[in-house]
Image (cartoon, rainbow, N blue to C red; front, side):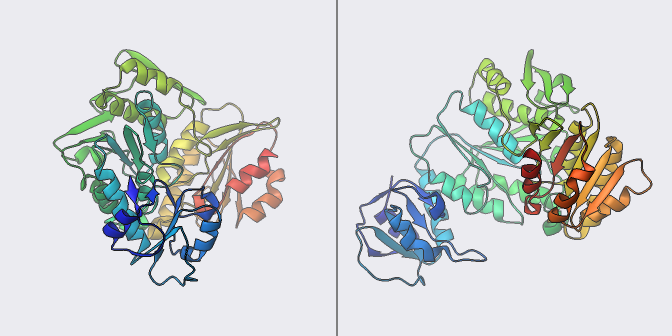
Length: 443
């Protein structure tokens, strides 16, 4: 339990009004999602100041607000608490670190260039078969989302946190807040290479996940060239091609289903992607380390369901949509194209820019074109500035290609370029908002 008094002491805060004995059990920085009894945290964004919404938060039932010291206040006395701090982000990080210190439970931290969310979801499915689990919701995997997740701890028996990063030191901070007992690094690819400069630097940044871990286990993908070089006392490996502690064998795969053998048991998955075989191996390894029976783990994986916008299959009368719009990197695009290649009939790919690639943009987007050719994709529809390189690289190939500057141009012509019977993979970085294309096609 955290009280207003605890917040004042931990964050060097100043109580403007309200009772210092108020108990604070749930925190949010979004008034749209605020429930009665929550603590509202005002955070300054790039385009707005969340501190200015404190009145709205009280109107919706907040019992306390944590605000920056320079927030203009009406100074009206309230029964609810207002606590002023030097920096609200630092405040919730300190509170989360304190909250974590109150719990002696397994904490699984998940990071990687590709597949963090899917791996996290699979691990949750497995671990929740035995324990009451608190798990990262949606994309709350940054310096704000991770602390807010940890602050939701109540009577939980395990915690699973997804950790994202764009720069050095970010995972260092998150790891020292969450204090993982077990860490998972899915792979080292090219996501955020524009910020970090090289895959080797991405590896260094990802290994910061160990900084807050005391004598815990690290699980890595032993088929990843860079992760295979990692040295660590308590290392657990998963893999398919290289000898590992946990290996998938006798892999069978179709477009929308896969299975594999592990420890003399077959696992079935609702997606025909080699990436999800790796994801399942991570979940299996975590389950074993947390003392979950093998039979329970297999049952949980057999009943796993995909999250929205991650290779989500939507069947319409005239065509099939594969909605993979959640985000994109070169590795995840290749994985998705490999799945698309397995379907019968004409294969169409709507592809928008992979962002945060800096000077590597042209090279990466030309690689996407080569992957389209290798996977025998019939039609590629490119959207965005960087996707122009993909379109150009497809010149002189047998692939039918189209280029549009933005989604509006695409939506104006999409009925002319999609035909009955197509299976359409839709993928791009989250910032390209390809979900609006999915919504149009779903009508």
